[in-house]
Length: 176
Image (tube, rainbow, N blue to C red):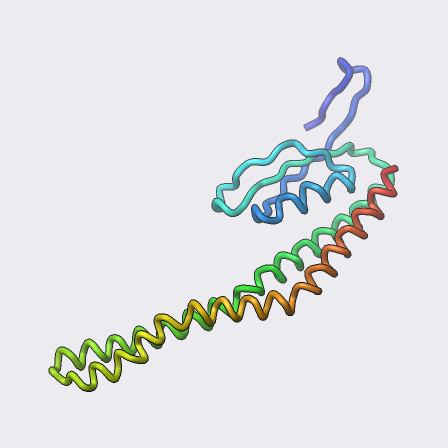
């Protein structure tokens, strides 16, 4: 797949790249790849899901410093993936703990229902109290855990952005 410009007088052979990224990371990739010689060729929603976008790029096959640009591009991509993992880590533990407490609350509610069906009303009330707590507590715990984790990973995320910008700056310098 080669492109032609200026009515065929200056031939440019292109290489193409398509990258599937999370929608919230689209701007990081769209801003980063041009520093490695890539030109945006559009973006489309991916078949994977609504949270994934395919970014399409092309660049001249005979670009200067291609080996070093490719090395820096790999470093950029690994830093971006690490950034995605850090962002995801904000919610992973909170979701797991909130879900587990919700399940325990549901188990208590099931016990309460069975106690009610067996006409053991005092046991039904005793089991319903932790059931409702187990249903209400996860939200507040989830919010607290996310705030705590966000505070912990914020400096790491900032370091990752600095690393990404440093790599992009080096690559941009090679293109100039």
